[in-house]
Image (tube, rainbow, N blue to C red; front, side):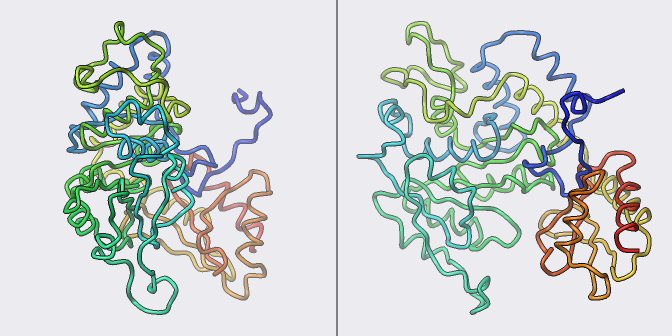
Length: 398
């Protein structure tokens, strides 16, 4: 039977690149899909649904509160806005005009990336700190915590931190110096799962707000994410995200999410309003997150390793190529690594071009492609995909 995509005239790809957004994210389980379908058949108060979901997120992350966002980038927008405005509805209404507000966010220069556009969207200025000599090959040093403290002024709304296994300085040191000045720390941990322990790691290190993707390793809807952190920041984020087209006298937000009595009035639609998240995404993410937490890291890794070994067997021996298993110690997802030699007959770029434009279209990891290295992730491979990849590589390289 033809798939819904075939009816629409859209090609189904073989995704060995992993759950990246441009390739539509992770594969959802039937259980998650069924939960989203059921959720679509009823109407609920979104604030109440968010409050209940937030209680579960708080329990699994160790944070004071949690919230479902439309992806990790949306979480960065909301967390930054919350740090700028606090619980002041007047300030919320004025964003992204930050006149008269704290309007700077400090970030280590080695943490800069195009995803921080989400932070800048709030109307703040990023203040870069430090020099990343270790990346330029000019030395061994990177930004140090004291430099972040030295850059904090009365205009500093937050410190932004991008988490990965190579991030410097250590988060705990950044938190210590930021909190010394009363400044919150927002962590972008979009792709830092697994292991499951990372759900709590950044809060335990003292982060005030942490953003995760819901559509990658968790296996939730692609357009979903998690924001976890301080209760006041989550409340501010919710106020700037929820549909506020309601009379204040008729507005009854759940006290566990928003303390209405602490507000002089309700804000209008906030900066985060375009980042809408539906009831289906909230429910689907909660089901996926529960399954992710309950499945042990060992079981998950074994499942992925089996897929990687199946793929290696399907590829077999290739002239001019070396096959091996690669695991990043900071994010334990086993990957198949294919390294081309000079005798392969084509460069890494040329091979990837052939894979993408072929039938089926096969997408792989390309972070090392200019060195002739391709990586294959097991996270989004379906039954039969390993054979398709093996056949195509044999045809191109043999």
